[in-house]
Amino acid sequence: MDLVAPGRSTARQLWRNIPWHILALALLIAALGVWNLASASRAAYAPIWKSQIYWLLIGLGACAGTMLLDYRYLLKLAYPIYGVVVLLLVAVLVRGHAAMGAQRWLDLGPVHLQPSELMKLAIILVVARFFHEDPHTKEGYSLLQLWLPALLLAVPVALVMKQPDLGTSMMIAAVAGSIILVAKVRWRSLLVLAAGFVASAVFAWAYLLKPYQKKRVLAFLDPEGDVLGAGYHASQSLIAVGSGQASGKGWGHGTQTQLSFLPEQHTDFVFSVWGEEHGFVGAVVLIGLYLVLLVMMLAVAASAREKFGSFLAVGVAAMVFWHVFVNIGMVTGLLPVVGVTLPLLSYGGSSVLTNMIGLGLLMNVAMRRHLF
Image 1 (cartoon, rainbow, N blue to C red):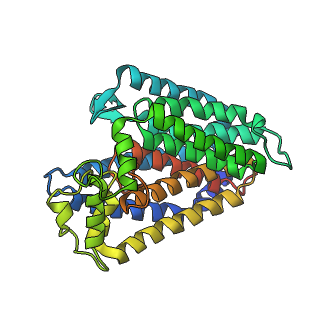
Image 2 (cartoon, rainbow, N blue to C red):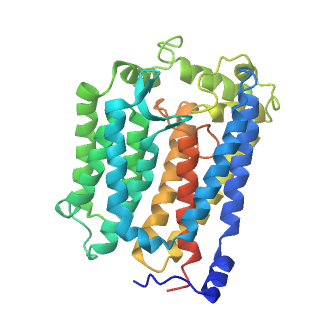
């Protein structure tokens, strides 16, 4: 692995290889998110869309910095980065900032950092390094051969569940699981994993889930059972999305949004705001933009010249996919409410920063695919 600093000709080639189309599409989605947040925050008289712009600018700087560093250096840094984020998760449990019944943030003066968001990137790095260094087997990996990535995944998932944050712990597991599946797992191992997942779900229901989390699952199974209690979020979201009909009510004219019936309308349920104001057509356009972005990301993974870069790209694509899939499924009543943000559309500094750094990692792989 050659880690020599690039010369002038190499720097020019890197500049030419920047996938501007990926960056442009991501920024378009982010711009739509700011526009949407400007409407979502009107009733509260809180211009959070301005704060979102600041975070996007910081995220752009982080994205640029990530692109400049040859991603192959991260092979050496993967485990140290993972260790630092694990320590931050422990710090959250010891002295974290608590809000709305959860302890998920570290108070860093003017900002609150959510380390569980950074763990999505850290788990991508360590799992990608494992499969890069581990010899490929034609038959696929057995469960015994996957003990290390399983352990690396179990530690942060347990710490995040303790906060409690079911949605983020699910996302961390889904991202790591996606990379593992791409690396090829034996069919028998997949069956055992499926059985283990069912057993873990039963165990979690009995011993890990908080009462409010159980109520959300029950509300999903019986939407009409408690529309003023556990089912309130999902019920109001469905009303908002459905009332948008084909073309929507127009920006700033969504009644569910402007009258504050829609809960968490700037974070978890930001797609409900979009659906109410821009209707089915607007929803299809937004989902289409995400789909195109995912196809571009997977193309980078397919064109990477070595395994580490390919697995990094797969991990970033999986992170975006699972957030979009679960969030939209959640707000449209197809999945239980678990608290998952919509990439680049939902408000949140840690979320924006994580997505922009992930974008920088992916573009880094794309820039260097012709250099070695």
